[in-house]
Length: 133
Image (cartoon, rainbow, N blue to C red):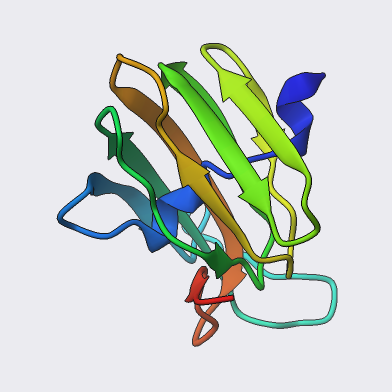
């Protein structure tokens, strides 16, 4: 359950290219049968999947997510600091639903590479991540 708190992996998205790698895994507006993905309110959905890689000592800087963000930690351990002062640690096998609209930043304070698969349930024209505090 410690995993459902953070997705700071989320972090992910705001990761600086010099400090971490982000690989887009998917970005779709249609389901497997070719039907448009839509939300109950009718907005045009856009689902994005990425792989975040952070080396020991990396940080992804302060950022927030205006859309629902979900992650799964494949390797390493990530420490996420929230503007509220809370700190969460997520590790291998943890799943997370990242805090929405709350600034946070992730740090790889361990000695192993951190890899997190992250999915955003966004909408066309809406950023998945907003940098800054």
